[in-house]
Length: 292
Image (cartoon, rainbow, N blue to C red; front, side):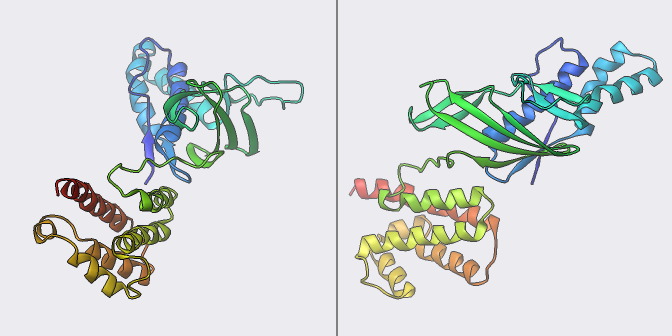
């Protein structure tokens, strides 16, 4: 489901209407790069922007006819060519079209692999823009970590009319795995979340089931149980009855995931509910084992 974008909630006061519209594009890029994953998108809502612009334009242009003309004029650049203000036209740069929306690329917060933590990233001026056809552009946007000043991330963003889609990134998204997830299956957890973030629901369900299966194998001895039913029963037998009565069951979760995979059911709600159940199993299990 797409997220609708209007004026940013932290809009600087005192801006002129055309500046407010420019800030909408900046905000759309900020939401997309900060909160969305590969192949997800945001949409600028003309209805929302129009409604938010109305009080300012009414003050400037009380006459109804003039107000409607100025509103249309103010919104019009959104439907033209978008160009980041920091990108300079060089000798080989194409001539910019007349209808142009100049906007600022936002600062974003991303995981830096050199700093090994989330840091602010600033856009660099080497942004490349491909104009495919009217109202369709591809932006290749490089960002530099402000912590180490060395790690770079480049994003590819597709614009179709008022929709922005994150279609690529130079480094794969870093998935933070909860510390209570056992280390030997942490990679399966991150692979499941990454697949889900990229709208690959069936692979994400498969990786969740793999996490459970590999964890139970590690507890019981790899290769000892060939059949899933035997593996699940044997794992259940290792758990204290008090634990089993209070917390979610990995064999039950395994069964639900298996049913979805056998039916090729791309059930996003199942993924979200069962990853929570997995968390609810492992979080207390770690404390349970530490307490003896």
